[in-house]
Length: 311
Figure 1 (tube, rainbow, N blue to C red):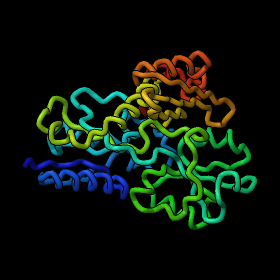
Figure 2 (cartoon, helix red, strand yellow; figure 1 turned 30 degrees about the horizontal axis):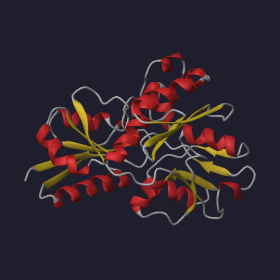
Figure 3 (cartoon, one colour; figure 1 turned 60 degrees about the vertical axis):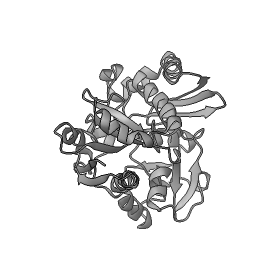
């Protein structure tokens, strides 16, 4: 069987994801090597992700290695991958989705409603911040960067009363001991693609695509394609205050989306059902735009947000 080289970020979670895919490929008889690649997002750790504003901050250097032939495939958290895959690349597989919800972690408090007045909550996600502000306007939201272990240490040291992370990463790393609440998607809409992995290859490499076909999950591809299409329609990237969550309901697809001002002063929610993921995404996006979504995004990021952007 083929020898395959995987490109990955070097964080604990990224390495778990890459090694997970490597193990599945080895079960198919492939020889697999792993190359760790440091990305822009890994190098800039002292400011919030939204302030960095760099396109493909967690993917650009990995794609460069892919284009140069140093690696044969890249394993990404799908929520970090730009909605428009650059020319020369393709998404060969979207893996079965882990729990897409956000979770609240705390040492002392049993959930969001149990946090005391003015509690310090850590997150660097504008999407989470905005929805938290609606649910609990009294909370003090503070920036939180670093890998999962770093964030958990900050919580354990008492720097925060609670932090918000993605359930998927914690489950994969077996670090759910401080999880106090799985926040329903109806309460805090997840990021587009949250919980799924995207396997990227050079465009047109049919042999590599064939090797990876067994990893592609039809349900995850349909749902996340809908979410990513919604994000693209709104001109948003992985660090903008937009949430999108699609799930199958019978023969239909149900899409919930949120566009919010980071201070929680304006939050638009829209939910619809439909058959085609792209058509459904366009319908929900148009409904949000008609209600003022573009004005919210322009107020936060400036007029450039009117055109599709991917920070």
